[in-house]
Image: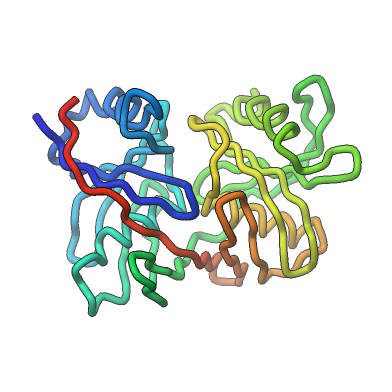
Length: 265
């Protein structure tokens, strides 16, 4: 049966969206692998299966490898952009994820790009530790922002660059310390108000951006790296803004829908 597919992205972190009632439960992982394939499918970092609700939508997120993930800040924002299409008076969207409900407020529309401020959950389980990865002892900070995160702060002997990402990203994402796997970010604190990150996502690999990765990186940069709690987070795909408050983490950035079609595979 053909499946309605929408493609959207936030800073190059791209997702496909399909109505969950058009899919078969025991075939969803294989569907994600097929449609997300960069060469033989449509291509994306993940597949979101969604169902509209009165307040927004419910979503299930599958990574490109077919594994289910708890939440993605950018996928949530992209889904909010999809919900908001054709509803010019809409201001607030509630997206229900496996990690809980996230409320997004539309703050700006420029062409097809919709900017939202999302209240993400407060970080939990923050702790620093040293792990052996890629033949080296690496200082990391682990935490959860609704999904597992492993953050490595850059230092003179461990610069934040693509070579280091490809060295440590896969080793840490699948490390035995994280039985369910973990997302990984290398973080450089450029100033108290600006950090730069490179991301390796569990079940995906390197991505242009990450909403939850930006949140986790900002928390660790503030707690351990001398940054403020209000920072610009720069990734290869662009700059998001993160504010860590007592009520949670405010994540601000844009998303846009770029394709509407049907999957006949």
